[in-house]
Structures are given as structure tokens and as C-alpha cells.
Length: 277
Ligand code: PXL
Figure 1 (tube, helix red, strand yellow):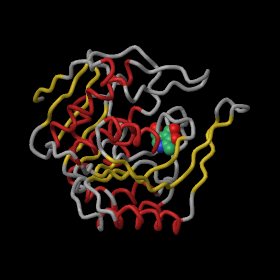
Figure 2 (cartoon, helix red, strand yellow):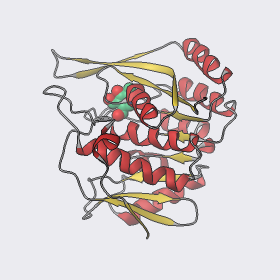
Figure 3 (cartoon, protein in one colour):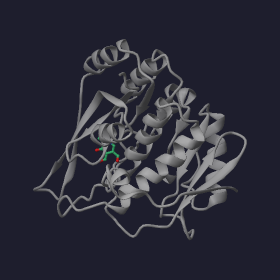
């Protein structure tokens, strides 16, 4: 028996909730075979209120990993934390050579809870080297504003404007994660395929234990595309998967609450509705 092969080009979250750890757990839950090309290692200092340290790997180490993974053939690829413009360019080259159009770009700019943008030049590099290859990109509200060159969207109308601008940059499908931050009744994500806007909704979940939610969502889409789903079905299932994971989020310690990546298969998922807006 052979498995569909999924590759993540992303950072290591040593605490295990986000980054490649989230991606691998999510790939596994979706029955795909996960491979990694590591860009940075993120550590957390227990003596400094869990302050993050970001240690980049040399680009030649990233290149060697990408060569390894691509030599096996991949069915889908995703990107996560890419700390520098050089790394973003290297990831873009890898995607060009990956032999698949199942490409998911999660345009990670900051870690949750940390407000410093990784590197201001990264946004332009993502626009130039990654977005043109994206079958799906999954910005949060802040990232959507940065990519679209506008202020952070605060309404569904502003999300629609941002999605149109990001579509014009070459991404085929844009999913802007409004999540529970928007002043809407439901947790709303906006899906735009260049033609139609859809609202993907779940009931808002009260939990603040949502570390790794973005990575888990993008990794679910990636695995679903590898498994042959349409983009829309892939995104809807990913929203179910991550809503289930957030609902069962838990406290790893006093500082961080990761999602439970394996929640959907064990406990079932909240209902996701999709409607044109
Ligand atoms: O959630 C964004 C993210 C992505 N990748 C890595 C991270 C984080 C946040 O902590 O550590 C490696």
C-alpha cells in the first residue's frame, strides 16, 4: 500500500502545538505520509515568561532537506514559518520544482502572543515568491491586511476587499481566518476563489487554548488536497478538523494551550456551515 505524500516547509515549535509538529500530527490524522523541511527552531524560555527564541537553520541545510523530500515525489506541499527573505525564495524554488499544484501557503508573520513581525521584508518576498503558486493561502486578519497592503480588516466587507487584492497577486483561493476575533455571531472564515465569496461558520468556541490552530488548519487543507479532495471540500473539512481541535484545546503549562490535533477522530467535530455571501 502506498500513502499520499505531504511535505511541510516550516519551523519547529519545540512545545509541540504549532509548526512542523502540528503539521505532522495533522498529516497523520488525515492518513497521509508527512515529510519535513525545517527552516527555524523556535524555543520558549520558562524563566522569561515563555519568551520565544528563533534560531534559523543555514539555507544550505534547508536546500538539502528539500532535495531529499522532492526526490521522493510529493502530492501536496505547505509552507509555514519562513524567517527570512532568502528562505522564502528558497521555498518558492522548491514549490516550483515540486511537481504538484497542491500548494498551501500559510503566510505566518508572527507567533500568537508575540507581536514582533519576524522580518518586515518577508511580506514582499511572500508576494513575489510564494503567492503566485498558492492553490490556497490562509492568512489571519493581520496577515491578510499586510499582504493586501491595507489596514487589518475588521469587517466582512474589508475581508472581501483584502481577499480580492490577494487573489490579484496570484493566489487561486484565499481563506481569511476571521476566527472569533470578528464582531460576528459565529466564528467566520471568508473563502474566495476569484468568483464567489463564501462564509464558513461554526459556533464560537470559548477556549483560549488555541495554540497551533493556524498551522493545523493549513496542514489539514494540504493533506486533503493530497488525498484528492476539491479545494472547497478540503477547506470545509479542515475547518471541522481545527474547530474540533480547538474545542479540546488544553493547558500544556501556565503559558501555552495547544489545540488537540487528534480531537476530530476521537470526539467528532462541530458543524461547519458554508453559504455564499
Ligand atoms: O503559530 C505560528 C507558528 C508557526 N510556526 C512555528 C511556531 C509558531 C508559533 O509559535 O512556533 C514554528
